[in-house]
Length: 93
Image (cartoon, rainbow, N blue to C red; front, side, top):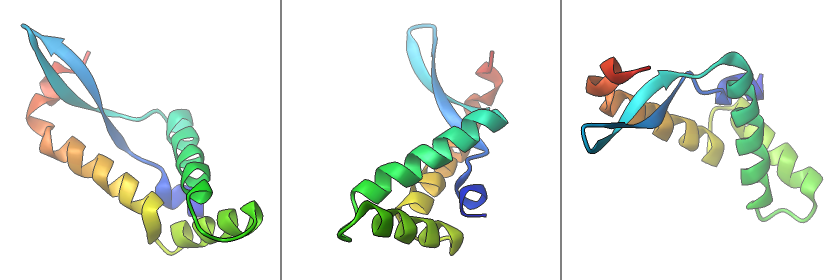
């Protein structure tokens, strides 16, 4: 459930069109979304202040389950970026 809450649906990819770089929102394949979610949880667990890695990981998983914490902010920022660049969605390849 915690990983499901953190899985991104959209991400932005850079695409060069006519000398300009555009951040193009694209859907995230299922496997990549799980990979990103687990990677974010582990990465942000390492930055926490608890003593053992087990406590850090448990804390981050609980935060993800409760839809709070740094990992959820990362997902929300990515979604916000994709929505802000929705105008460039027609550049998808």
